[in-house]
Each structure stands twice: as C-alpha cells, then as structure tokens.
Image (cartoon, rainbow, N blue to C red; front, top):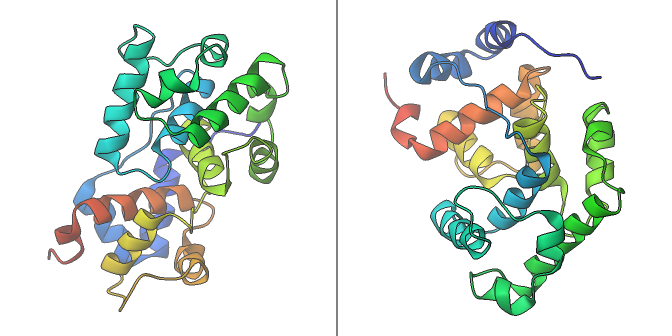
Length: 212
C-alpha cells in the first residue's frame, strides 16, 4: 500500500520551496481534497466532465443521475451497460462519451479493473492501468490519483486550469507549455498535488494573484 503523507509537512515544504506559492497558501488557507467513497463513481464523473465547462458538466451529471432515479449517485455498472444511446443522449451525453462510460462499466463488471489492487500501486502504474480503458487518458488518471487516491505528488501539466493559474500567479506573458509548467512545479516535489490545487484556486480567483 502507498503510505499516507502529512498534510502539515506538505504545506511546510511548499511554503519553503516556493515563496509565491507560500503566499497563496496563506491567502487561501490549507486545502485537501476529500475523496469520494466510490472509485467507479469518481472515474465516471471525470469522464462526464471531460472537455466541458463545470456548470454544463454539472447539469448533465444531474440529469444523468435522475435518469436512474438518483439525486447524487451514478447508476451501477450493470445499469449503465443496459442503457441505450438514446437514453444517454437524452441527458446530454454524446455517443462517443457513452461508449467510453460503457467501457469503464464493462471493465468493472468483468473484473479487469480492480480498484483495491490499483490503490496499492505506484502512481505510474496506476496511470498505465487506467489508460487502457477507452476515454481515460493521462488527465483523467491524474484526477483519479489526486482526488480519489489522495496521492501527494501529481502535477497535471496538461490541465488548462493549472496552466492558467501558473500564468496568473507567476505573471507569465502567456500560458506555460507543459514543459514550462513542469519546471515551475519541480520545486514543489514531492507535494506537487498541493501546488496544483492552488493553481486551480488562482485560476478561479484571478485577483488573488495580485492582492498584496
């Protein structure tokens, strides 16, 4: 099993390693994501939110849950596999995304995706396992590592929000490339997940990057 880490130690390291990030931690306060209790639901949610604005994705998610008579829980894998494309399109899910979601459900049903086994693997191996499922790329795997498994050293350099936060926090002339984002986040290791969280916060509240 991958060992737990100290939240206090992570923030102490980030403050010392990066003064700009340290000021953001003081401004926003400490933050740690709370994982969902259902890893299948976490991956399904990540798929739903791919390439969609947050508000639009949340609306689709509500309609998707309601399709199965639920308020805040997705359908069981067997229920999803029994759903037609027409059912899923009626709540705003594209045919391609529906196929991806079914592939995830099938991996769960037939045992190819064992969440307990994955939870014990190193980050790189978790990513390797997850990206074999249609519709799960590196971004979704990174989100799973951070928000479901609580891994401390994840830097999703392909995430627009992280790059936008870096652009604002470090007063860059434009969005950093993936390589530039990796270099900015290098001093945060081995707690790059924490730094990433604050980049999202800055992207959501741009004034925080310029506040005294």
